[in-house]
Image (cartoon, rainbow, N blue to C red; front, side, top):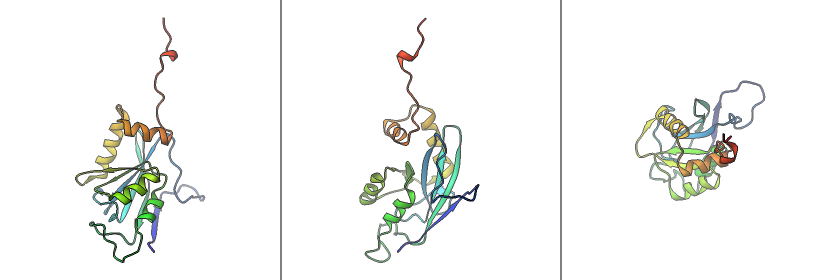
Length: 167
């Protein structure tokens, strides 16, 4: 059995298991070993930094830590122990998941939880990941991101010809 620890910023005494998402924000999870860099495979990540990201800003929502993880080859330390399901459950409510790698079965579980996994080829700082996410939000988002934005309820209304005043 894997234990999960959550570190959240709390502003009041009432606190749910995952803080409410900021209006108009995408919730982004980043696989990390050190809370500074995207530098972990999904299965071997000891921590996930969870941020709410808008076009203008980002805010750390929580850090989720795991005591037992798979090694980078995907091998569990003790056979028969499911280390993936607790991670997926802990990240429910996130829209995007950035990691260095993710196996097929793990990706299927993440996608079925309505989280879009994004593999990044090289380690980079969390700030670089968040800046790139903001850039995608500011410009014309790619089709996969437009779909995620629509599912998250944060898609901007497209201008309609009928809405414009013709003079």
